[in-house]
Image 1 (tube, one colour):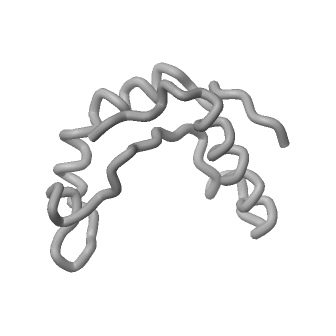
Image 2 (cartoon, helix red, strand yellow):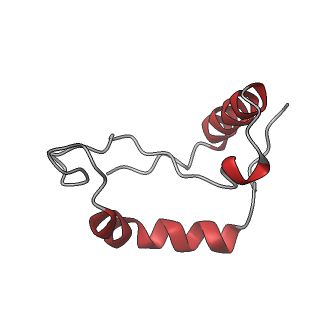
Length: 84
């Protein structure tokens, strides 16, 4: 899977939209992501990320995305700018 997080502007636009939608739907702060990664390929059965019943294979996702998850923890919360 290609990581498209190099484009800070795209990541900021997507995050700003998530925050806007969360506010409009009265999400509490625990329901709003604090950080994220963007992927160019959706999860699917074909790429072994989902089961045939469309459930996430958590063990596979953890194995594949461990470097990205660790990087998000090191990066911290909301380290990309956006306009409200």
